[in-house]
Amino acid sequence: MLNMAKKAYVGLDLGHYAIKAVQLERTASGWKVTRAASVPTPEESIKDGVVVDTTAMAAAIKSLLKDAHISASSAFVAVAGASVVVRTVRIPSMPEATLRKSIKFEAGRYVPTSVADSYIEFEILGEADEENQMDVLIVAAPKEVVESRIKACEAAGLDVEAVDVEPFAAFRSLVESDEEHGWFTGTVAMVDIGATTTSMSVVRDGVFAMTRSIPNGGKTLTEALKNYFKLTEEDAESGKRQLDVSELNDDAKIKENPPLKVLQSHLDDLVREIRRSLNYYQSQQTDASNNPVTRILITGGGAKLNGVTQYLSHKLQLPAFAAGVLANPRFLHSGPLEESGLDLAVASGLAMRTHPHAA
Ligand SMILES: Nc1ncnc2c1ncn2[C@@H]1O[C@H](COP(=O)(O)OP(=O)(O)OP(=O)(O)O)[C@@H](O)[C@H]1O
Ligand SMILES: [Mg+2]
Image (cartoon, rainbow, N blue to C red):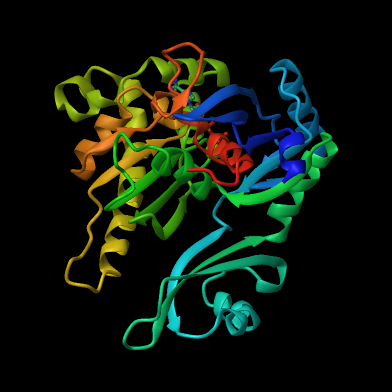
């Protein structure tokens, strides 16, 4: 415990577009964001969740911490991506120690890659039911995803205190901490629109029912504009930020706006995949109450795209909220008011782990 007080921690989100760092202090009324900063991810330094260029990634982390005046000796990081599996499964009831022995076998049914090359964690959710079945949350992550991230942090001079899973971290900062909205009850879908992927989770009464990774994100849109209009990366990126995709809900406006039309098919792909996941979740529901998803919380840098919340809400016929950490009254900060912290959900949730009695 004494150590906890002395060590300085940072929550570090190693994204494919940007590296985000957050430091928090616990206060009586919530959290004080003492530091929040980001730097672009060095090109080609991370692929499909694996840090492939440790040196470049470590240098970027170092300069991020230095420029933002963050002094930390330890980091909380997270893993994400298509290869990271988060599933709640129903299996015959057994003591935790027994399950620990057979977890690799159980997980093997859900893990697409080799179980031997993955880290596997689990949590038994609640008591066994009358059929003597119990729900177990299984998380599996390829060792190279986990280890490459730890290595990059260590090369930047940081010990890694713990490795989390991105949607769990986001949940902590968005839902658990947000008493104002009462998002903790009922069934919510969390959609994080990143650069190369969109991660989507369904959480029911605070328990993860499913998590999926969709290979479509902000970068997909930038690339589409870049290729169609033969633009540089920078021009495509800044052009994208001028658009308002809620205009896609109005047929008359699309005809006049070729860039919007270019984005439409990709956004529709994303909508289709989110809908598929919602349908899948719904098909797994066996009890009469059904617990349908009643709202969508949208995060990630990709959620800064003008009009994307309205667009998704309209297409999916569900209320959708852009859930910026800095817009949550439980997070106090002195930064510019217009910055909502949409891309800080993961880093903030990681920083919250600094304080063991969080949330
Ligand atoms: N104002 C904006 N308008 C539209 N898109 C934006 C805006 N700001 C950032 N983006 C997009 O957000 C994406 C990056 O989001 P984010 O930082 O959450 O990704 P990441 O965490 O680095 O990636 P991943 O989660 O895939 O590893 C980029 O594709 C970028 O183009
Ligand atoms: Mg991300």
